[in-house]
Length: 249
Image 1 (cartoon, one colour):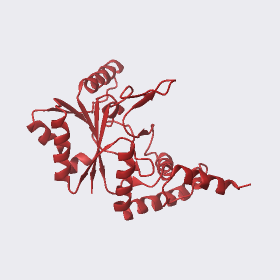
Image 2 (cartoon, rainbow, N blue to C red):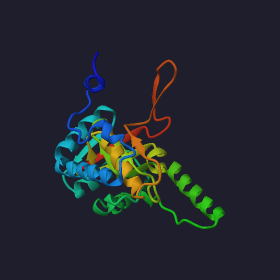
Image 3 (cartoon, rainbow, N blue to C red):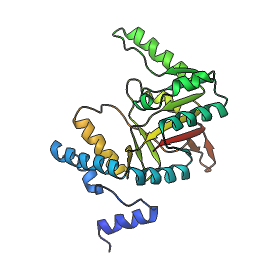
Image 4 (cartoon, rainbow, N blue to C red):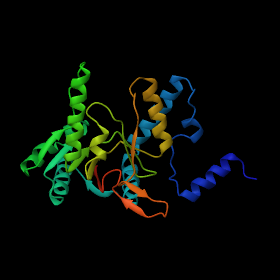
């Protein structure tokens, strides 16, 4: 009889799980490990993501394309702006809602999209101590998100093993941007790709212990898919019909 590690390896081989993990699965689930140990492992994960950025980007592109992302490779921020603009132009977009991810400081899409006649807004709101005012602002953002043609976000991480884009919702990074418009464009930069979900959950654990992560994690693996009891697959019921991944690097 195979032992536990042999059994798990057989499962990984059957699923075609990518090699090159930085940590072992047992390490990723060591929830009660002291903070310094988690931080040391997290530092090793981040160092690997940076040193292996080119290979991980290629692995991510292949996996993402296989599960439904439309891939656009860009060699520079300028190329990325052009790619985003062309995607929106080809879709006939009139309105765009974007997140406040830092990537937009390096990939400034607003001016290019506005020059094409598109109305560009940012998914942010001023919080208020007045509950009624705060609710009104939340509803206004929700209405904008449902009425917009394209939602554009950066990413916080990506997972090469599954072709998954990872977004940590927070002020200015509402889940509405990636979920409610019929088209979602995500901009991914070199150094953001992790080998597997194990590394992702380790980093989330580290961020949580440091107080840097307080909410949920959005895992986006291709366009929205829904199947009924007869396994009839429908695209776009609970999210975008079309998803584009612009890879910079």
